[in-house]
Amino acid sequence: MSRLSRRSFIVGATGAGMVLSGCANGIGSRGDMSIDARIDSTLDFLYSEYPGTRELSQKAVGMLVMPLVTEAGFGIGGAYGRGALRVGGASVDYYSQTRASFGFQIGAQQYAHALFFMTQDALQDFRTSPGWVAGADIKYAISNAGDRISADTITATSPVVAVVFGQAGLIVGATIEGTKYNRIIA
Image (cartoon, rainbow, N blue to C red; front, side, top):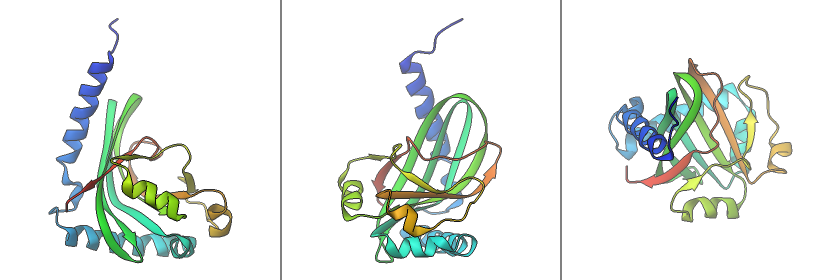
């Protein structure tokens, strides 16, 4: 039985990420107008399906919206998506997200997610980092089952709140832990 080296894992994960990035996630062109249009429709869906998120967005100082993330894996997997950071309701920066994974996995799925930055410090850390990585300190507002949320209880406990929604596919669950976000030119 051969062992999988760190180099093999990195090469495989990078290859999976490149394949997923070539999918273009159905967004069409890389232009900021098409990303913004997709974000607008994603937010309309989010607010109608989970009304508590509207209050959450009103309390947030900024919000990163990834309208479509594509994830696939067969032992080695990856995820890719593009979106925008909105402050005061306007898109101020555009971002890509990538993630590599390794383990018992097979299948593919797509989902959307939003990160609500509840403090200026959390937003500033995100905007000034060369590549921000989502960690275990993120509070998930909605489980995969789509539970209702209360913005008061969530905002008191975490500077960054993640909402993952609209899952469709064959991989069970969706998480953004370990996901890296990089600023792009749309």
